[in-house]
Amino acid sequence: MSDYDPRERLALFPDSTRIEPAVGGARLTIAGCDLAALAQSHGTPLYLYDQATLDAAVAEYREALARFYPGPSGITYAGKAFLCVAMAQWVQRQGLWLDCTGVGELRVAAAAGVRREQIVVHGVNKGSADVDAALAQAGTIVVDGLAEVRRLSALAEDQPALALPDVWLRVRPGLAVETHAHTQTGQKDSKFGMDWDEAAESVRICQQHGLPLTGLHFHQGSHFHDPEPIGPALDRTLDLVESLSADLGWQPRVICPGGGWGVAYHEDELPHPTVKEYVRFVGERLAEGCRGRGLPFPRLHLEPGRSIVAQAGVALYRVGAVKHTAGRRWLLVDGGLADNPRRALYGARYSALPVDGLERPASGPAWLGGPYCESGDILIEDLALPDIEPGELIAVPVSGAYQLSMASNYNGARKPAVLWLDEGRAHLIQERETLDDLIRRDRALPAG
Image (cartoon, rainbow, N blue to C red; front, side, top):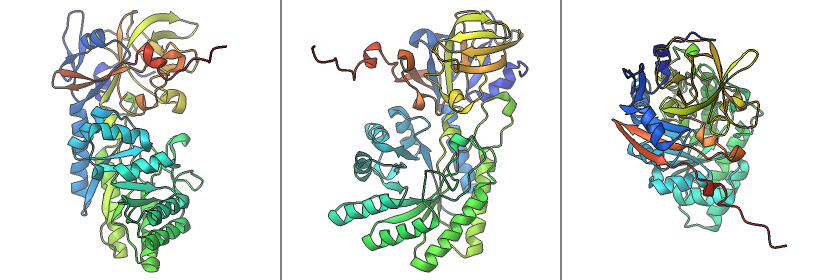
């Protein structure tokens, strides 16, 4: 159990979070908004996204790329972290590219009016609908294996007038970053990407059929904290570039080492290595590798999702009951596994603060559990908190990534409402699901 220091935990919250004086004790605000009033108006669980934090994260990436990489660069927002129409609109306004996986995310991008040249499509096993949507909407498609390259080449041969997006090959460097086994992607036995021989054959096919092959992509895993394993993967990729250049006369205009840079979810993880440190390592290693091999600097494209959006998000829950068991104080809240499966999937840790009365002293450790019929429905374990009464609001920071995008309707849960906070204003960007939504797809049995 960590000590209870609300000001230390404040570092996990969005940049615009403040502790303000209030009747009955200090109160949390975000972007100048009263969280208790938002919960009263929109219900709980309630998710909040702070635009100031999102803007600052993009600025940090841009400044670091400009400082530490001498060639051209770009940023792609990983839609899998969290995507809705409003988020896609923000991505476009920022001039970022948008990474979409499959026809569903492409539909969101279309509804947001994201321009074709800003959309890049991923997917390890793209269906025909995914490929058709990518060809119609995307500026770049990342192919994941030989079968997909052959499929695109057949389409190009059958439809000579077809305007294909740029093609990147996803290669498998054989090295993963240090993270949870479920989120490692670069190892030799990963389901993602292709090996060097398959990459060479893919280049040959693209050349034979006139496919617009422009880039190489790899990704080693998500939520890592040490960039060192990216170094050998970049070196191996540049060795591949040398080989492809010598054998086939082809070099990529773009190299994308993915994203996945982690964030601090708990005060015990502070201070966390910065985006600047990550970008500096990647940019300098790529530049050094190109100079040493006499290669031109490619466009360096990074694909951050979590490190842009995670800290911008906060989840608000209301405590319904307090239970004391043999060794635990349970704060039972109105959300959990259905809106945030990360702890159940990866053993993720979180912290929290009460929205009101922050400066009360801690009364011991607490376990935050949800209402769902699973013993694994636990949001937080062993966290120092004050005495909390039923009806109080709890704010869980760093809730912006891989929560709502993996949310479910387990036990008939309705997915939460989402608010966008900006300079004292709260905009509803996703409505809470209704009871009717839960049965919208259902059809009755035929009459017996």
